[in-house]
Image 1 (cartoon, rainbow, N blue to C red):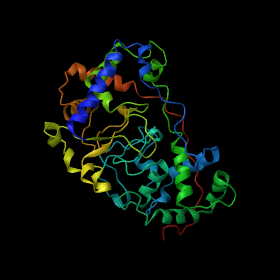
Image 2: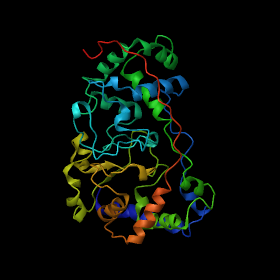
Image 3: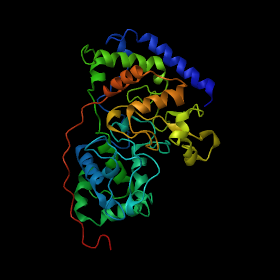
Image 4: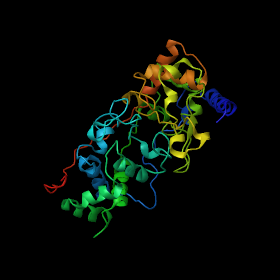
Amino acid sequence: MNHSSVFQQILRGAVLSALLLPCTPAVAQNWQPLPDQPPIPDDNPMNSAKINLGKMLYFDPRLSSTGTVSCNSCHNLAEGGDDSRPTSFGVHGKLGGRNAPTVWNAAFLSAQFWDGRTATLEEQAKGPLANPVEMGMESADAAAARIREISGYRPYFDRGFGQDSEINADTIARAMAAFERTLLTPHSAFDRFVNGDKGALTEQQQSGMRKFAATGCTACHSGVNFAGRELPMGTGFFQKFPTFSDSAYVEKYGFLSDAGRFEATGKEADRHIWRVPGLRNIEHTAPYFHNGAVSSLEEAVRVMASTQLNRSLTDQDVTDIVAFLDSLSGEFPELTLPRLPNGPGNLFQ
């Protein structure tokens, strides 16, 4: 994406900001609250048994070669859906190359992973299983074979998918995706404000909301998840980062050391192209950016203004925008740890 198209997006954001001043619930209907449920594919309908099975698999470290790493290891549901590290530890203490994105509200993303290389949660769920740095299995099929060895899983697959259903990479991924589609955080202060509650946002948060739009942030961070406009699943909303590579922040935080989507596609046009991350619950997901190089949300706001919009913000602007971003944190559902079926004693021999 060239600079002229970027500025066209910024202009659209500026036009939107004009519509939002002054910021009142009546006008704020231009913003979108989080829906009660995400898109659900026709080939993976939801049911409680499948969701329960997916929850078990999400927390089961036996899906990793060493029996030490589960999905929850890097996407911790006890906090922000990430692991609070710049990059994550996988099997044998291996360190990944990118920051773990939050799983909360990931069901609203039209592409998964930082580089958008998979279209759906189902496809995404298979990736870490066979990644040698993450869960370290030889393949997703090998992970499924491991689960088949745990006979106690059989009735849970029968309940979720039907009697004598297959236990394979596809049903494992479909179960985990069904569970992940329940990981929503609705009813944030922002959502309540947009839905008409005049007192849901403080004056400072309303000021930050106006500045967020006027600065041009909405050019990319729009839609229900603040991750770009709604697109068909698999399309992905992408942007070049950094856009202004002469920003001092680029060298300071090493943003050009990873080529982004280019690593997945090999296309030169995809160099330093990234899927736009969502901003909901962002106060809970530090450190920030694909390499986890920025530790504070205040600094992340300054970085984005400089590298994406070629702008410098005052300290007050930053404080107000951060206050608005804090209003995007929603209600986390109550979760209980699942009981996992016992496995044979020779599972890792």
